[in-house]
Length: 114
Length: 112
Image 1 (tube, rainbow over the protein chains, first blue to last red):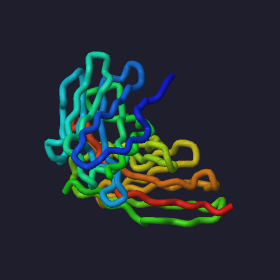
Image 2: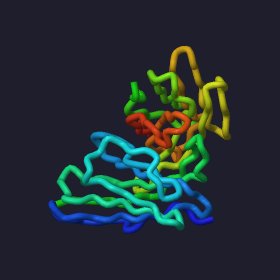
Image 3: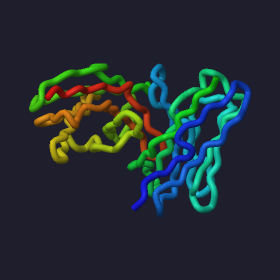
């Protein structure tokens, strides 16, 4: 069974640009979450989607957005990139029960903003 | 109230030792406490998780101890091996929030 797939693995962008990251969840999983991981702030929750609906959102500026498609694949977008957006962006999926537990993480996309 | 405090920041043990990583929380509404292991260049992988109605849970060499009254939980790794060298994260979640609050991580090194 394939795991959570994130593309691309590495990305270098210039300040002010925008970026789109992609996540394919485990087959059958309907919930997708996104986290930002940095050495200074650790793992921080960005947002969670289930059946194309955002059910929760973390404390990030509006430059960070996401969406989920009908096949459960998800994308997140960061507009007007800042140097501080450099981080490992992790996607996680779960079957999507009401409890919201049991997330499996992908290997992440390493974003570097220069 | 949403924080999860994790200690120590780093830990070095000899092969066969029992490293213990501790986490504490404030919000009593948390009802799910997973531990994740992360190797360099990889995403976190779920090791073991516990609910507050259980005081201890074992899976292989990994044991979670949970103290509901103290609002603390800890991870014990029995017979630790060099391959266990990784960063460990505790987390907490509330039913229906669909998000984890992670601790700051513990970098474990097991010496051969």
